[in-house]
Amino acid sequence: MEELRKLTEELCGEGKLLHAVLSNPRNKAEGLPSKLKAKPVLLKGERMVQLEKTIGPKAYHENVTPDEAAANLAEWLEGHFKQGLLQTAEADYQVLVDKRGKVTILRKAATKQQAELGHNRKKQYLLEEGVPVPFLVKLGVMNKEGKVLAPKYDKFRQINRYLEMIEDVVEYLPQDRVVRIVDFGCGKSYLTFALYHYLVAVRGMKAEIVGLDLKADVITHCSALAEEFGYAGLQFQTGDISQYEGAEQADMVVTLHACDTATDAALEKAVRWNAGVILSVPCCQHELNRQIKNELLSPMLSHGLVKERFAALATDSMRASLLELAGYRTQLLEFIDMEHTPKNILIRAVRQPSPDRKKLAAQARSYLAFRDMLHAEPYLERALVDILKPVLDEA
Image 1 (cartoon, rainbow, N blue to C red):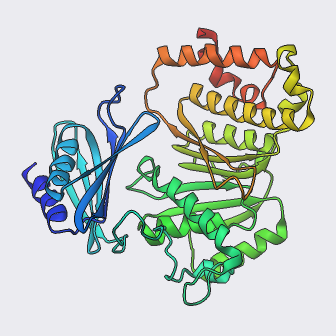
Image 2 (image 1 turned 180 degrees about the vertical axis):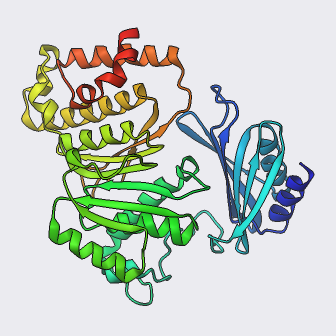
Image 3 (image 1 turned 90 degrees about the vertical axis):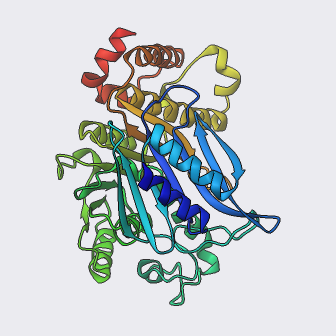
């Protein structure tokens, strides 16, 4: 513990700390933080550290002195969190705390550059503007100097928003072996290339990613680009999601804008592979639109546009509930700003090692009541009936 306190005091006290994330809490009781982040800020010319505690669905911020930040980071690691990542311009420090309280500190190559301070500073992206990234240059998002081209700035923001969501779940991926990822419906693969680049080039992890899509010409183009960039662990295949049998296991499954029940087919694969992380942006949710009926909701359902939007929200809500019942912790997040696309909900699911059976039974009752109210028969429930039946029967 003394080594840990010396580290936090040095990094905070000498102004070296650029960013810190403490995660994987020992106690998940209500009211305790599930994550703690720290970053330097400049307030009225004085260097401070902003702490962000995530408790339930909310984030709470507090600005403290560097000494107070050092003490906070050490105390929360000693007493609550199992791991932490402390980043400086010179090195990353991964802190692991086992059940007996033994602390292991691993020093790794730096993955973060010096950040500007202050609340009104320019947005800091994981892939920074001004730093050329080969695949972004080739795909026409950046020029050779790393400047983002104006027509592609929304795409640049989308890629970084996606990587921020990846950063939040990296801890749930294997750290000691190759990470296996399947990306269903990869399309032109901006985000697939970004994911591979971030995990391998930025995080220094080992990864194998398979991108799957129905369009043979797109797959041929992406395969050529992967070879050009030297992305040995990235391959692309032509195929249908529901018929894909190219893997027996995956650590992460990604499905972005797979249409209608193709999303459900991908989610089923992910659950059966026992994937640790699932990221899904659904699209064109037609199935429930044809099924739902409820007289009390007729003021909504009698209008085609409103019914379509309600059906889409209901579909994603039920998908999230079914993933919860299958053993995942799920969140529905805004993928990118509403003005860019209406298809902006991302389902993020992380597998839980030992779900609370009592809580699951209550969730099952809630799900069944909602489903029956709408007279719906979701594809995903039918596809996972063997896994879900024990939980639904207990309800």
